[in-house]
Length: 277
Image (cartoon, rainbow, N blue to C red):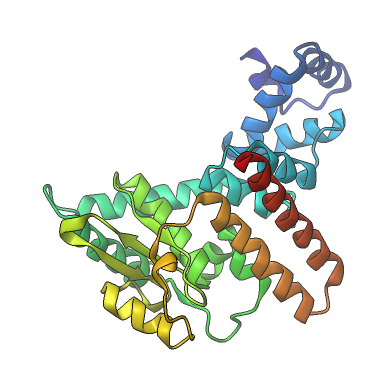
């Protein structure tokens, strides 16, 4: 698109022409800019976002609510939109490049024909040894632990955010894992019948058997924890981030932000209710 070459030109005449062209394209023009603002590359994202602001359509709160209402959930996009509700200038391209870098290193070490278990052993080595990711025991309730870009920058996270990073890297390496939203400890799993196992990213990718996970649930007074061993839908993963943030912003006295994320939880609940009818 020719407009791409003009995004960084801030002279009044050119900027006016760009705005007029975007307006003439209605939703297509805005959709194009929003795509660039998410993953247009360094520099391009910033200028695309500036133009969206000038058009009066850049509203992170509204964008995340619209995403929730769409019921078309994709994990990486959801994490980006969630992050922008607090960090409106978030440039996801830096996050994506980092995840690509981690995945390339993993792929270089994964031997052809490896099982999923063997691939996860490689991810464990790269993520938790080479890149130094670990559970944030000192500041577990820090809200930053729910935002992927912050977890990457600090190399510290909580079970759900470390699990999401693990998932996004695995996806880039060409294999899928399931998110498992057990109470108190978010896990990952490979549920293929012949090699089923669970992974605990908060404990540097520790492998757990189903029996171990069931015992862990028993310690939380969940005698029948079968439902918690099933994969969590993407929407529930994102909603769990929101629940964390309501709690963490509340205990830190940031009640306005707590109310904001409570609103997103309500949006998720209403979206699921609409889809179930």
